[in-house]
Image (cartoon, rainbow, N blue to C red; front, side, top):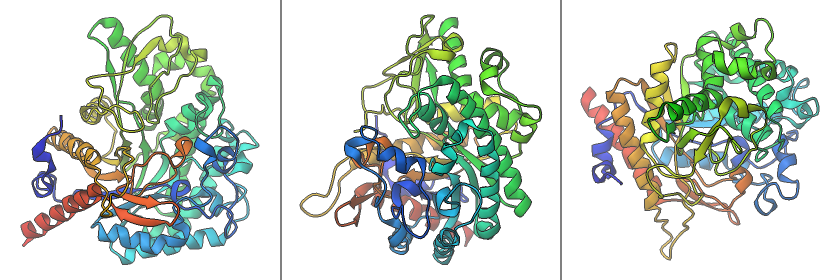
Length: 484
């Protein structure tokens, strides 16, 4: 149920710490377009999008929101909304068209201009190095299942930080590695569309290794750069308090979350998971020390929760779990470890237009859980949170997306409680600044605070965007008054 007091922007803003950061988020392939412009090489998403049957109605990112050509007006829009910060991703194939080797200076020039534009407008710079657009050339060698890709990522990280790192406020290595490993290599819903549990588990470890190498490479260029990673950690509830269901929830946590948190925070995979699946992770000597780099922050992306119960048969071990919608993956290699069944609903049947259940307490549940588990976990930003509602402009030109406003308000209300409990939460980035290419869903699903007419590229701030802007501005005003 929506909390009415959470809707008042000034009242809500006043409940957050004075140093709290308000921002919006996007990703390169989802908004930039210009996929064949100024030397950019092809990515796995260019290939995947153009394969029949992979993306809704054959949509692709060739034009997207045309941000590559409209970046100045888009930054003006972010400034108009009163945002403190902008989270975006850098397209690896713009910088290194073949993944390694010759640097495309025009690609670096684009991000140079973009970051300079943010600095000029007083917008903090929160880039992500990898948001799923692997250079296609690297996929030919195995992509994230091949250890050489981790070395290539480190080279790419160093190039970016050397040129752009002086103006970065916080840099993430990866966005949602769960998606670029499990969803992409096992479930097959995302590029490269593979359906192999062994490949997915290999990709998990290579990605973790790449994260560690990337942090090392970035800090070798700039020792004071603020490094982090963005995880779409699964907020998993047991179906009951029975020992069997509690154990099933723990196994699910380790499989979906622990495979990233464990190596990054503690330098180790869960012992039971490694005993069951370690050969598929393909660990080598020294890997865990490389992965276990101290971080300055981490990002949590949350949309909806999962509920699991014990199931010895485990015929569909991944049904409905994940941050990218409904799907099924056969039990395969992990069935003996997981032995779970994911249930389709938790407390309500209230869902967004993409079919994801709304449960705001899932965001605080996960934060409480991970800070109790991992002593070395740094401060956190909510780096994505938002809702898909597909309403467009009415006869007056306004976009009344009250359900999205309610969604964000309820989640912010939960986060106030998390801060009160001692969670070191530093900021919130709404997903997304604008409607965009929503991966396998194409342009069918809309998450933006700003409506995009894809025929004209006209931008219209939705009611939720105006409300969120009011929250950020009220917070800034309250902080200014307190400082006087």
